[in-house]
Image (cartoon, rainbow, N blue to C red; front, side, top):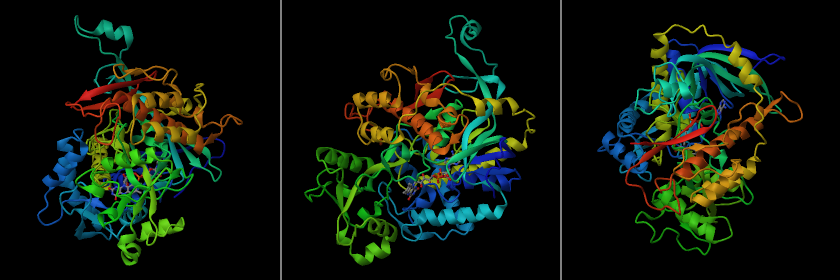
Length: 598
Ligand SMILES: Cc1cc2nc3c(=O)[nH]c(=O)nc-3n(C[C@H](O)[C@H](O)[C@H](O)COP(=O)(O)OP(=O)(O)OC[C@H]3O[C@@H](n4cnc5c(N)ncnc54)[C@H](O)[C@@H]3O)c2cc1C
């Protein structure tokens, strides 16, 4: 295992498949593709990091007596609020027991008989381990298998951008491949049959590899180039775009931003699930400990600052109402006060249950001087899960030839407008394995391309458009929480777009394109140090990616003038009768936002 070998010139690697990320999705892709005989290279910012090891609750699978995949489908569709795709959800539910079997076959010690119940599930179907350490155990088994496989790993290495070669076909502005030679502008209009609307085509580009940077101890990057016939984005979520989050430090939306810059279709990014109970600490920002909802399942109660139960009379399910309902109620109460939090009262659970049943949560609270046995826990909603992402099918195929996506970075049609608890690690494994198999079948039937990376390499690593200043990361994250958090409205989102740097805000819901939005798409230039041109820094690259995904979230949220799933607009509280997906696509000049009816 090694990082880059920068000695002044870009380092270089070759593989059939480059996988970005070493969470549940990335490792599942890598193991499956390698087992099919492909040369796989895993590129990861942090081999042992990501969200997967943090998963507390578990993995959903219809394994219990009396439970059925269909019931799992039904619960998932209800949570998805009209945007989950039934056939994709069916594939998830049908595949879940097999995914658990594969994981236990790799050595994961999971409880598959005494299943748990979680909010939104109509049956006990949560496979778990070590009470609240399920993700850690699943990741331990996956990582052991990866290390034993001999697959090459570039740890402490950040994917920067895709390398692409021009292809002899086009894609239209929604990102659909046409199979025809690309023509643009006037040529497209002239080529259209009389009376038919001209469809502008954009030259399609096939994926040829990745630009990446080895992360030095000081955060400085040593850039290199990976040549690959297929690239898989399995780079997880984007919680760090918000002021507080349950997500790890590396969840900066890199994979989604990379795909967006390359012109892939990004879908429904406005749907960000906020976990109601993230530990609130004075002045804290970024990653904060998650207080699992299983604590409320065991009897803990949310209370306002006066000690009154928060959810009483709000929803028949009380403290176990769906996350968006609980988070919205908490946000309203928090906004009406000035403490910035409410209380979670777990004192009634007793020492034994807290220490032995919830050791991770109890330890996290005690680390910050809060003993949940005797004291109420200050909590506030925090960004938790990105329901949207790179549009992909469950086999990982995106709108760009050669680019695949799986896990939280992808939007496959499972999560829709809101994620059902414990469906995401299950999805990451199922989609990851299917993606590895799909790539194997695609690459085994084609010959290796002899396309040279020389020209693309030069342009990606030396491109120097003047894209302007990166908004201060912390200031942007605070604005995201304020204006694109649990509750949103048009005025706040317009203000947010100004903070992001869109001159004059963004056109209203009827308009499609986002003029002037090329600024947040800046990749490499944004990562160069002002004092030392040519020097790349990880934190600047991440800040640029955060700005890109913030733009995509804000633009989608502004355009979606309705409330659905985890997207709540205080100025548009109804859910529209006909659901639609928000599609965002960078066409090389501007960000094109459109709607796709289901
Ligand atoms: C606290 C917490 C608790 C959760 N509990 C549950 C639960 O109980 N059940 C459930 O189903 N889901 C849960 N989730 C969600 C779930 O953990 C994630 O959705 C899932 O693990 C995502 O897997 P992934 O492989 O897509 O991404 P991750 O596991 O996040 O992995 C992403 C990988 O990409 C790498 N990476 C990122 N950017 C780059 C880059 N530019 N270059 C190279 N590498 C990069 C990271 O280092 C990491 O290895 C929880 C999430 C959190 C944060």
